[in-house]
Image (cartoon, rainbow, N blue to C red; front, side, top):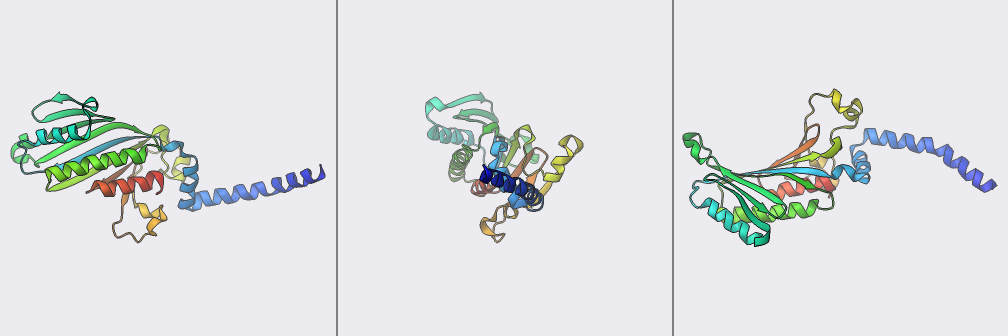
Length: 233
């Protein structure tokens, strides 16, 4: 009984010190902040939107080529064309609803671009790597087959219930209802020590109130950046 009381006394004595150290580290050191956030990883249930732009000189036969690629990747029971307009197609491919359209009918104002959009894609932390890998394989194959002159990839990651870990500790304490606009732009190496800031190809995040945005010219780099941001790999 006496030993138990002594243990309880020491525990109670050191609890305020431990909590104080935790609060100080949580507020002062971003890497500790994100380490702690990772432990309470509910915020990593997210909704994604993927936007891709490919520039090409010739639209003739492009949609047929895309459709053949999708059919080859996805089995017939996972592939379905739901919209079939001249310059706009919609495909159901597994978990992806892929909108494909072009701007070639804009005449001299055309950028000669093909646009792909996958929106409202619900992704949990357990499936993030799998979804990123499937998207990479899809768009890398499209690039190899269609050989665009330029590529641009955009990934918007929306955090559910306002659980955006990049929003900022002090800003969150103010309450998001009191903040009309929030935006910051920083290298991913600032929070992920993998390359100690010496990565020759710095990857960046743009952060808003309830989402983060990644823009890259290749999906491989976008995938790596997203994995670092979501999974701290």
